[in-house]
Image 1 (cartoon, rainbow, N blue to C red):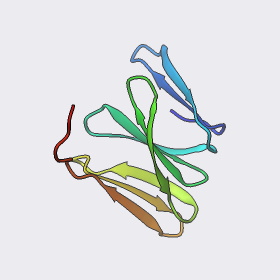
Image 2 (cartoon, rainbow, N blue to C red):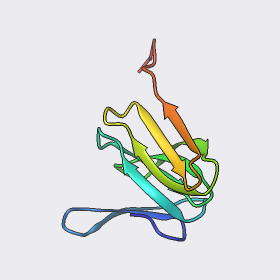
Image 3 (spheres, helix red, strand yellow):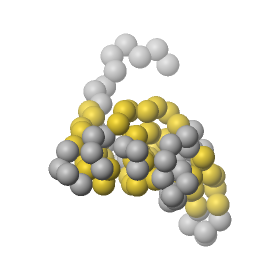
Length: 104
């Protein structure tokens, strides 16, 4: 869950707190879970979109800002796209393509 101060909390099924992530942006407007259940995306009142590791709350990247007054955020069913939209109808879509020649 997220709050008006920019904190994000992850709770276990039994209600115990697993981690807290204090983020350097404004109030959390929306949070969405990636279909793999390994990451979440957050949307702030300022329109910032961040991807966090669900395991420990580490911020993995900042995708940029959504135009207008932020309203919602959602991953596609297969997780290949992330859509953020505003109250005025503006939206932004990010896509992820498989990386080639990854050395891991």
